[in-house]
Image (cartoon, rainbow, N blue to C red; front, side):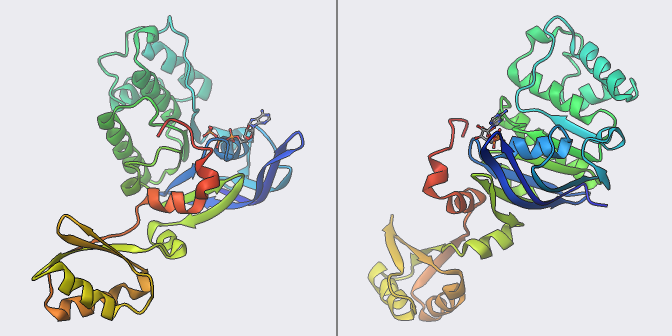
Length: 310
Ligand SMILES: Nc1ncnc2c1ncn2[C@@H]1O[C@H](COP(=O)(O)OP(=O)(O)OP(=O)(O)O)[C@@H](O)[C@H]1O
């Protein structure tokens, strides 16, 4: 049973279309990164999965049922983009309140607060919490009742790098226990090792979906080889010129090394020729990162939408 399936889903607020023909699914035990610029439609997609709104076209099924059904919703954990809590209550009081609302065991409350690193602060009023602490309390709230589907909207906003890495590690543990997780973000640095698949949304349309290998293949972006000459840069450059089948191979010198941008399909032939020449002392290979792939798919039009939370 899939955690959710969106089939040919479109949505419009009033007249303007916000999502168009989205096909997307999430399986148990998987972390999907949903990436897109500000206003791309990430939160709208989440609201449709939560059943807060109905699609104007297409179908949304969640955990084998209908989005919004109480039997389905009780198995969903959701961390909204901007978490706000009553400032006079303590973390423990707030989480206990949400546990009662959700019908989750109160025993979970101190356990979860400990899990998100708030064990020392659970009896302090939330008005004394930092932004990162409020975010962790929001995460604990989302984890109440051990959800089968966890949806996190910009979960790393307000977290420092160590807390961000802790969050990703926690998500990986939950994933390994079978939870399906959606991570919505426009903050890409650091997320790459923790997601199984990425979906890139621009202007309400999915540009690409897949694991990093599939996205790299689809993007067909050049791979950068960084080469240390064994003898001289000019001799190494001649080898590359001769071996290259494509015209206009990008070659740059960089601190006594050569940087060569090569198409993926030509990489192995070029490497073999360079190795056989005896003109190279060392090689490093840089594949396009998730950020490179994201920028490739959203294009300069998408970049113009990006906000300041990078
Ligand atoms: N209640 C609403 N009424 C009208 N338009 C809306 C409403 N909510 C969102 N929109 C519009 O829908 C589009 C998608 O918004 P959405 O919040 O889904 O984007 P997002 O990808 O989550 O953006 P961000 O990264 O900034 O949170 C935007 O153009 C936004 O202005």
